[in-house]
Length: 127
Image (cartoon, rainbow, N blue to C red; front, side, top):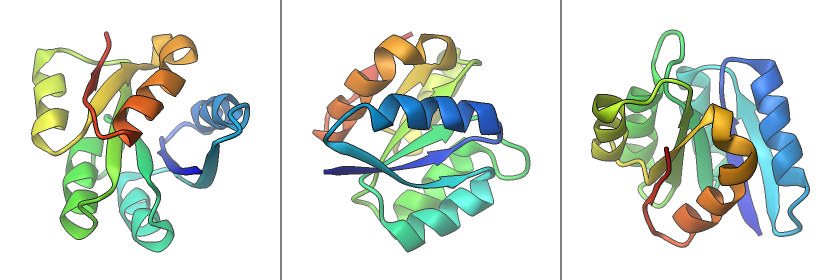
């Protein structure tokens, strides 16, 4: 069973992601966070297999939160989710230790395959 933490500052986005994941028999959302700081705390508490991380968060952004999560728990996989990808953000999340990224407007078709890919230890790069 793949356990997942969702970190996004928009409640509606977290609910959409949760709904997609709940349709998968082998995946379970163990927690949600609405900030990078809260995401770091919940990752430490819940020890999820994968964190779905929004990049542009108020306060601590998703790149810094990814660095902090992976410094404390290097076995966690991070999948970035954002509307605002460009080459610099893509490189920044990968450099921080993220395993891939999905655009929010393509999440419906790409999120589940992306989760399976990063959970298996492979990079996922989809525009």
